[in-house]
Every structure is written in structure tokens, then in C-alpha cells.
Image 1 (tube, rainbow, N blue to C red):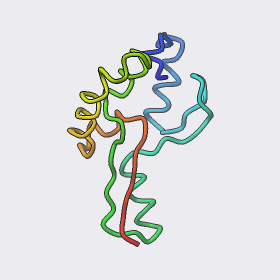
Image 2 (cartoon, helix red, strand yellow):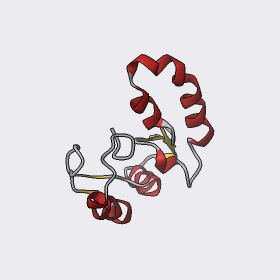
Image 3 (cartoon, rainbow, N blue to C red):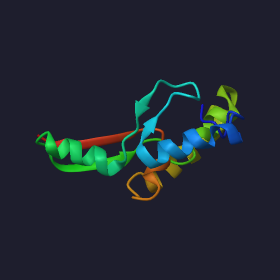
Length: 109
């Protein structure tokens, strides 16, 4: 769950969030392992450097992904379709794809 919908968004976590946004390096403070979170450009570049061509990157969940977590399993069916439609609308928008929790890169080998 993200800090905003999980009621963990407090002034104490702002430095961690700011560092993650700036560098991509996440410190593991809010319940996930320490990791590097790629930007779409970083992921695209890594695929291209690995020999893939025609690389496209997609934001998987879209900006409303936390809605499903916030409402819980009992409301999943009610909110699923609109959440998926929102994700599809912005899955390749260069400004909004980063609002997804996961990115997907595809390319031709």
C-alpha cells in the first residue's frame, strides 16, 4: 500500500519520498525493500543498451491504482473497470506513467 492511502503520509516520511523522486533510490522506510525505482527513460535506455529495438514503456496500474487498495477487496469489482480505464488512458503519457506502481518495457530482440 502506498503511504497516501495507507495513512502513512506524514512529515517524517517526506525526506524519504523526496529522495526517491530525485534519485530513484528508495530506502525501504515504508514497508518495501530498499531498491532503485526506474523512470520510464531509464528503463527504455536499459532495454536499448541490451540490444532491444522499438522499445516502448507502459505504466501498468495508472494513477488510480491505490484506489483499489484503499477500498479493499470487497469493493474491488465496483472500482476495477474505472481504475483500468484510467490506467489505459495514461499508460504511455510521459508525465503520468510514473504514477503507476510498476512499469513494463517491451521491445524487439
